[in-house]
Image 1 (cartoon, rainbow, N blue to C red):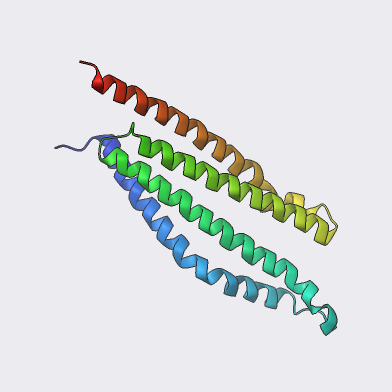
Image 2 (tube, helix red, strand yellow):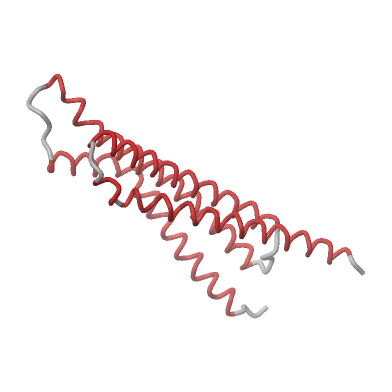
Length: 171
């Protein structure tokens, strides 16, 4: 059977998404060491050992945030691969796509919520409006809108799958 242009594009996108997924999985275990190295070179900590834990808080929050968001990103990428698999099988209007898009939406909402928590933490910790101008503040609306888009697409794919199943039963 001859592949359509859409299937060729889906194959290329799946390869790119797989490469990104693998890079994400490789980078996740390196996050604590890279963050620690950045903090050690940027700030060696207070001279007072009693207050040394204060300097570790931003570092620990950043590590937790990056690992958490990296895991959610891996979920989004994996669900995207699943959607592309159905396109390659020429079954785009399946319930599998609706479920995959819904999972990607929830992972996106979780990233948005984690970014919001990190922005609030930074505002309280630094007592400055500077965190409002960081990438974390930008993550909140971007991932919330992406999650909403995925939910809409999930509903559309679910409805298309239901219509297709009903149409297949019609003589």
